[in-house]
Length: 477
Image (cartoon, rainbow, N blue to C red; front, top):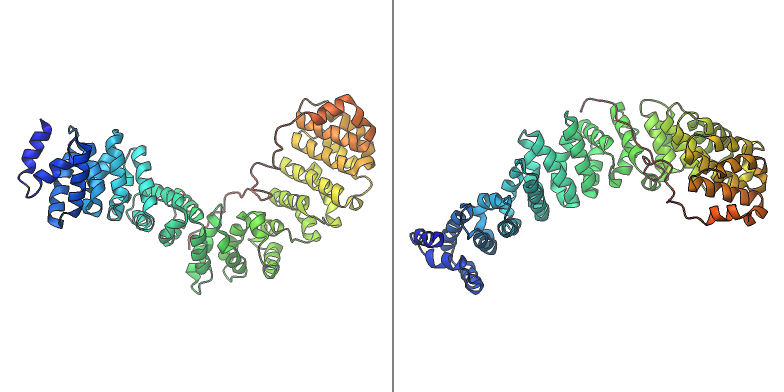
């Protein structure tokens, strides 16, 4: 009955009744033929058809809404006038209606502004669908999302940031707006925008690097502030940040050092050698020293004296970074050995773990650099309250082999542990110190029993990098 009433109403529209009626037919073949005819129709007739289909789609009681949404999908750009109705249908529970509505919207780049504005909707399901459609639209979607930051709606800005982050490099056009938002006085907006810039990656890195090299001090200050707030600064900004360590503005130097400290050792390893002097100079003193020191340590190119001094630093993250750096060097420097042994008694468990691992590296690569009392000092660490320290200490003693014979009693104590990894490390060390023990059944069982995957030095560390504490509060330039 409803369909008959609709067709009667549609008859008042020129050229509409027959064409639209076939588009809503229960016969799939008739609908397909009608869709072809509608696609070939003139602009005026298409407008009439869209107007009629909008009415059907907006009628929640109509049984033809799925057909109407599918017909609008087939009409392509001509369906632009139906965007509000399509968005409303997108949020409905009926998949047979929402699915074609979503496909229709994804083909309508003209719908991007309305889709972006609709992110203010309460329904998380609708917002998720809107985000996917905007992301699929690429540049038009990014531009529309960037406009949301001008609406004065915090939640809209936060939701837009999330979609832009998920878009990745395709959101390049939104970088300037996100950079301004990342310098916002609102901490949530700042963090969300910074995360979006990290997600965009290379385009954001290149844009921020250019801003950091700008002759305009405000541009440089803004870029350094944004990069300093990012948990994952783009690698493309690396050299510009290193160059900014010599900026006349102390705030720019500070934020640049903070950004450099957030990079992983793998990224910092690519820093050209000519930037190391500037990094070393910044690490020597001043407000940026702590952050520059962390970055320098992660480059793997800090000399032995730097590493030895860093092991004595007041900042625990610097001590940890120095020990972690020594754990990864192929030729660890002799001058860092004694402060490294002292670090086994550090108040921070993460520092002790890294120190024990570093001593294992010395024992494996340059055992002659270790003093005669090293096995006894390392053996004390076998009683550490942290199980990871005990495992690393046992591994270090095992690398020393027979030279660590004095630590045998402490290793047997660790061997009694119920923890698989501690037992295995102690068993391996005992076998290295006294090869005949490799025939001991208990030792053999401990070595053959599979243990859980070995954890990294600290879950908070990316590779051998550092977890960066909250940045000091500074005014946006």
